[in-house]
Image (cartoon, rainbow, N blue to C red; front, top):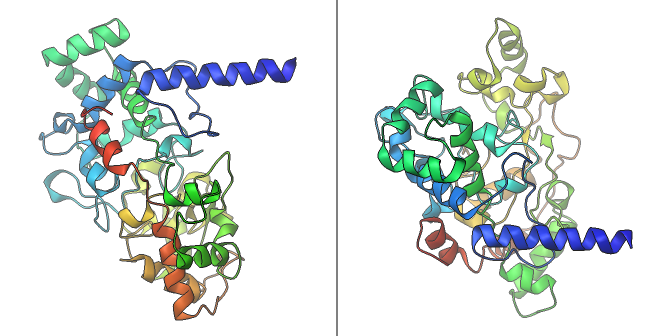
Length: 363
């Protein structure tokens, strides 16, 4: 009876989430976990969608969330590193917001635990959206009639705060779910859903190429990430970690500030934990729709999937903190192309419809 009760609860959660976002999640995948104080509603998701695409959330009305997480570019931006107001450049590549709701931590260094917390950072970052404070953003939005009306309808108040803004954006982002691809049809039994080269790539992915060590596939969590942080040597290309670590330990700079400090940002997870084992370690990204989100790595240093595979094939870049799993792979040219074909098979079948619905075009 206890098992049946749990199943019924899960089904109710699935139904409620589907009602909020206008459609069902792929079979077998539970919806992303919602904070108890931010349940999804249709009105909240729609408000969050408007905020996500509104450039007025930036100090000069030129940058929105969608500027760096553009639907047509796989909800990334196609640039090496993010660009904010006045063309200012950050230090890291813009990750996709697709399936971000399923990640345990947000940002490349994991400095935000929730989507709500993540949404607050770029708004007041001087390199990104540049608002002088959250209070300044609150005032700016309260002066816009459509937002006074929208927040009143959704949260019951026109005196909304940054917490309400973040909750709405996060609710919308939890609808950006993409887990329907040729690979999913293949794994469900349709052996003709992907090419023979993609099938060979899948075998390599789980074997010789060692990709599954960090990007393993689990049917109930099919996002190809272990949600952990690894030093694979990307940040070591031009960095003196020992010097940078000492610099990061000085003063009272926050992880948010350090993440945008040239050079220091390459310390990765270390700027959050201050643990030596995390020096140069960055979050394992998911691989769904990866063919749409070039360039790659946390710094956008690899322009293509082929370049990424070459990087792993040589075993990364040697450094004192290199992850023990990084070893030369000795892949053949044909094997590299097969891996690329497999990753292309992770592109969602309904990506065009997801793009349309995210922009308010319906489902």
